[in-house]
Length: 214
Ligand code: SAM
Image (cartoon, rainbow, N blue to C red):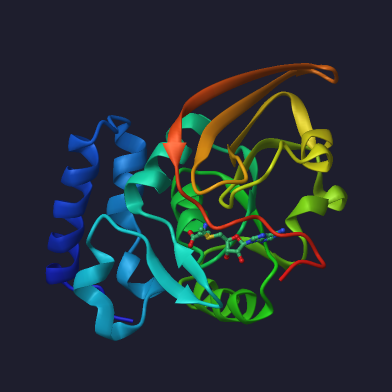
């Protein structure tokens, strides 16, 4: 795995594009600069890795657009040492951005082929991220509660079991909706039955599928 001056230069341009689109949090921009996005795509796609676009990663899934990764991370208000659950590991890119922000990251993926590929990559990259193969709707009760939960696939509604695994005072960011576009939503858990929902515009995600869905 080679991360050359050329790659770093391409990344710098990408970071400036993301900044120009409104992301001003320097810790997030530094994390984008730190994570070699070309490692998450096949080696023939170096140029594409540094465009602000989603891209196929196999199994009908995508690596999210860098701006979307930054936007969701900003909404999540991650603090150093936070225990963060990500649903939808995919390529592992978002998980690495969270790790660069100082989070303790747990992440779940339902596609075994992606889980295996990403586990190997993150080991090679020496990230101490905890990867799990399974259904994100179930969360990770054995490791709960979490300070933050980030869902990177489109859910029809806020998954109840994930809410139960969120600390009081914690936040979940999840794109909500069944159609072509979803509303980026932040849920703040003030109490077990006291939730505050905030909405942040339209995005487009692959669906969050349950165990039996294809
Ligand atoms: N965060 C990823 C990244 O950085 O590459 C991008 C995620 S991709 C947009 C959405 C991912 O969610 C896909 O890999 C998909 O297989 C996964 N997914 C969908 N439903 C899921 C579920 N119920 N549990 C776990 N993962 C799920």
